[in-house]
Length: 326
View 1 (cartoon, rainbow, N blue to C red):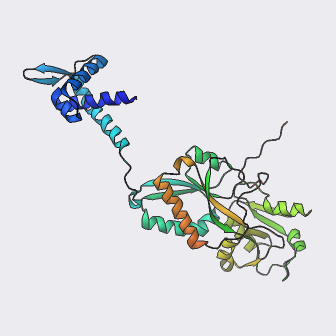
View 2: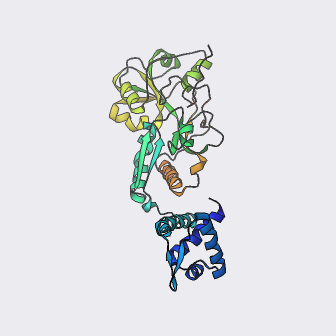
View 3: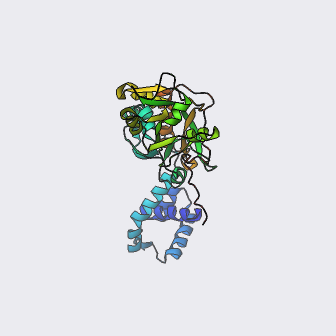
């Protein structure tokens, strides 16, 4: 619709509502001759007289009567669209957001985010879904609203904000028959391991660091959930290299023993990731702020030199690996 078309609709709406040229002119702030000229153009365009003389007044034609509610609605909708946005009120927000996150994020931040939303935006529904190699594409295509994770190389337009950091520890069950008081690298590589692979692709940072030293470990189980991995470590002789925050949370309940990993591993940072199309949206901005506030409450400590990106060769980076050429 061109701007001139909207002007025609406004004039037509006034004519239909007032049923007279003079009244319509007064309604929209035009002179009577100008409105008469507009009526002539409308008659030519619609092929209908719209208003016909009847005694001292004018009557709407059947076509005009049929158009009246439709034109009224279109003009009202257009005017609402052009009005300044109302001030954002969180309690009035009724919306469902889809968020990519692991059970680690839900365990550490979920309760705090939930409390903030219940208290400040009770009409918001959060639907959490697993992280995938296609998080950035789903954010771009409006398949989801927000993602929390550590990623490899993301599209240039993607926006992000660091949320929290963590470091790795090794979890084994109390009374593990192999692990001695002094946990050595030789013991570490000889153990069978369970690994958390949220995107379903085993391997990753720990294995890369071992490989740089000419070493490797045996991964017997790769699972997508942090809690499942912790339970396996608590009930078997597997070793588990895992984020410290969630391991501390379940250390006593599961009967775990947490050890320093006998390998130099850098901490890592989790980030909020979103598409720029929603950057200025008040509801989305409120949701991002809720996650930031929750992280300051539940994970305020910041680890130095935390990795913010995974190498693109890391199978856990969130990048789809290219298929080999045949």
